Image (cartoon, rainbow, N blue to C red; front, side):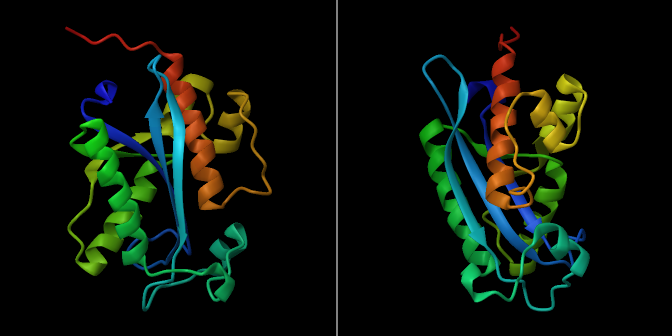
Amino acid sequence: MRRFRGLLPVVIDIETAGLNPLTDALLEIAAVILDVDKGGQLYRSQTLSYHIEPFKGARIEAASLEITGIDPTNPLRFAIPETQALYRIFTLIREKLASFACYRAILVGHNAWFDLNFILAALKRHGMTDNPFHQFTTLDTASLSALIYGETVLARALRRAKISFDLRKAHSAIYDAERTADLFCLMVNKFAFTPIR
């Protein structure tokens, strides 16, 4: 991933029970690993997704659940603790860092700072120190699509990019992460990369 200065872009989407990463539950997370073909084009390679148990004392806002359609108490979610979900995703990312000879991952997301803040809060909550992501740098598809397509809303940006988007499947971490990955790859692939000497 020479294009990203030794950083490995990993697309992340989360679903939460509110907007405050310090108090509100993290309910779903999906990570999309990208790869590069022989022509240097990025493409979506592998997706990992987990339903997450709300941490002890987490706040759950009814309005957020109404948007996502998630029932945190449903046993058929087969939710796992935050620590397990993050450990599994981080393990895969570390394997990919080694295979691409990258030194750190960079979080790609639609409004990426939101996703990164929830991950950082979960890590702090559990005393986890093995974060593979850059601590503050992200690649934000909301900003990039505003620049390229004049849209910041994911559904509208995808429409302008001619990528299909089903509103009935929106607000599922796996669906939104994969659509965000498709949008990111399209935007990156659209522009030839010439290293500055």
